[in-house]
Length: 116
Image 1 (cartoon, one colour):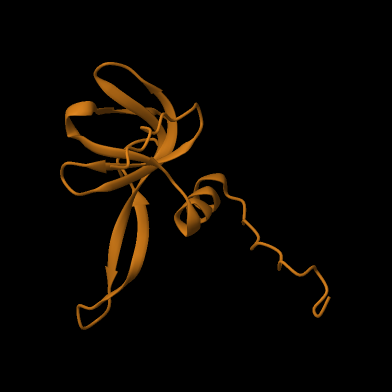
Image 2 (image 1 turned 45 degrees about the vertical axis):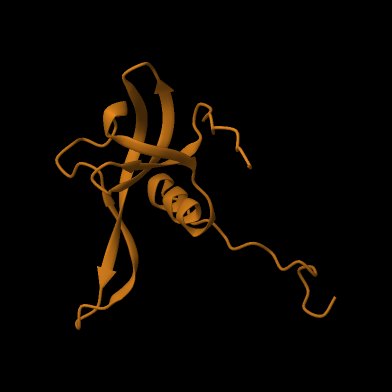
């Protein structure tokens, strides 16, 4: 049986939190105590549907639309199913959306000049 070590986030890690409601929340890890995990700049991953109702992709929306957005948000441990480190396109898009900076794509593995 393979047993994986439980992920322990560090300060400012971008983490994905799956809630018991099924919502996936992405944010910067601030702290954890015996009652909650606290994150900043949280967004919720949403499903985007086309005109015919078909799933066409995923989007991001604010965790709480009515908040100022600069506060830290504690999420009760009783509502958290799992916490993982965010990666891939979700991480790139989150960083771009929350920092205001455009994240350039990775350079090709064979160098900057085509054919080398």
